[in-house]
Image (spheres, one colour):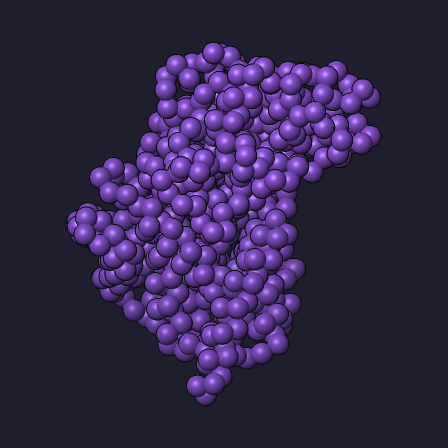
Length: 606
């Protein structure tokens, strides 16, 4: 390929990787459901995105480094604080028993469904399809939103099974290659040696990275990002040069080590890693799917779909049933775990590398390893991606996908707003620093605690996992501005509102600052004055003319029948339609129009 062809190919990969993920987010689908067909179609339409032509010998090293970085970022989420002892035991059984059952079951099914395979290729397909991975599990969990302990269990299994499955694949690949070449130097115990090498390199790399991050955060915090990438890539390369795919173990352990220390903040590292990982995942899926041709898929499609059916309906339920026997999980919870085993990037990467090498050695059926894996990845992600959320709701083990409002501030009228929103059917969580304010909120039936937004990036991510909207209502205008800016990064600019700042605030807001609750005149002091003068929050159903229903007061919120929230902001009233529940700051409940149902008033308690 010419330099222009390579430039075009790289540009296409990046554009397709990002645009497919943006489209998936818009359609509220797991990104891989869009990425795989996009890459497949791009491979049909042009030769410029075929990895063997675009990258040549660089392809496999690039895949190894990219997957290592992905696993490091996933390891950063493995905090032991979030894992109860019984969950840890179940994870260990899912990794141990589950891997063996899946390997044996997939290998047996592949041998029965496909002709022309020897013993080695089905065993290798089984090892490849053992893995699941954070690239598909974490986005699915975000859609499904199961109970916390189930989310933790599935996340840990998805992250830890990747390096274990990759090493199992290396073990079986080595055996098949040795049989094909007549090499007698192969030893089955090499998997344990690879695990040991990966663990030692990972521990050493984690210690070095911890020291570097501690020093950079003292003097040059922005250098934490390149320092992290340097050590992660170095650890992966060193471990892989010693033992094949030991680098995956090393990078996963490094991430887990950092996730469980408390001396350094990982905010910058995690923020950059998340951005980089999304780009790497998109690029890898586009490249891998572009390398599969329609004829390759057509040749294996019936058997591959049969294999997927066996994996989904027989092998995964059996593995989960054995691994969760006598665990504290209920039957319904076990059923959800059994219905969550998508395959991801590690399966595609290992199939791409192993299949090509064995095909060059003339191993029968090796050329079908990648197409079979491609169909398995796409089919399992589609099946679980489209059905896991309804199944979780049907089983009653998913948290309610309703609007969840975070209110920052525990003073009386902030609690009154929280009560009014909760009474309208929304989920509400309140952050308050003072113990008496927390106690008063809990007495009123509110979920109240101190927020951990400023602790570290991992805690912030977990704390805001269910939050959809936020109201920042403390008496400190500068604090409100800073917290609102942080929350907008996580929730979006249209979902965060703060009380209007007073003119004497120490810090000037950005010129494009938006999201002021009500209008600029409705400051903390003004709201307090209006409550002190006898006004209260009034809730009623909007009548036929909702725009004039609250002419005697100030409408602040409108809640639809399906639980959507509209907030008055920047001088504009909330979007109100007949039948919506409107919450307004008014002199009395009579402010509603005469045609409205009975109103409710929420008065600040002392």
